[in-house]
Image 1 (tube, rainbow, N blue to C red):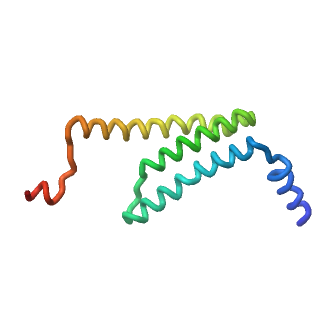
Image 2 (image 1 turned 30 degrees about the horizontal axis):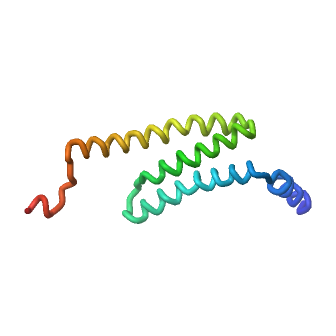
Length: 117
């Protein structure tokens, strides 16, 4: 049994190792970082938040994984990553538009100093 597991691990992770696998693993690492970013941001404020970095890591990792899946001709990952990119781009677009709107309207968050004085 141990030999079968060792042989399987070797065939999956060692025998197939090439530059594209490394590229795909980098993409997966970027994609995974978004979860750590979200978790740490939420822990910091003690409530669930989704920081901009979550969407940046999602987009960057998603693009790398899409390229990897196209090169590897993997239809499952191609569909999954391509559809996800629309969500990541849309969320970043909404964030940018919100910042532009606030800047255009000169909206400054109220602080104790601006309220009292």
